[in-house]
Length: 227
Image (cartoon, rainbow, N blue to C red; front, side, top):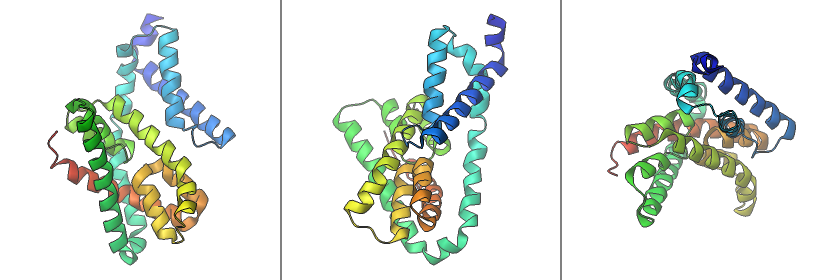
């Protein structure tokens, strides 16, 4: 049995199976909190604890999955290119909205981390919480952050954003679908974008565009941060 756990295929198979279960649960329940990534993480943690499988053994395969984060980041350029007409038509609100959203997100986290005297590693892990996982992990690692913390923060941010988005749109009486989509995509990345698609086609398109643009802006801003 120990030879099975030591194989890189074990970590890959367990990760894929756990994510598949998460997708099935999300489709069945239709609940935003049942995010496949969150469910997969909980399932993997529970299995490792129950069967007392060393994390290093699992991570031999899990680390192989991490290799795909960089290609996944590059693929965001495709979504931006596919919506190039929307970007040209609404370039000013897109750029300004994503820039302001990214500044507020990273600035508020930096302020609270300083206020609560959190160390540099935790701060770096939380700063990119509002962008998609592939970008967030890269930004966190570049500044000495802890990837697992970053993934957890990204999941929580996305789930909260998808839950709160419809309520906040009604509360502030946001009638413009472009504005609604930009706000959702900038603050709650892919999980929020899935909710934006449920709200409307334009909201979903603008949210997907904002997710890519705000990710690029966050990477640029992170270069000038001193933690």
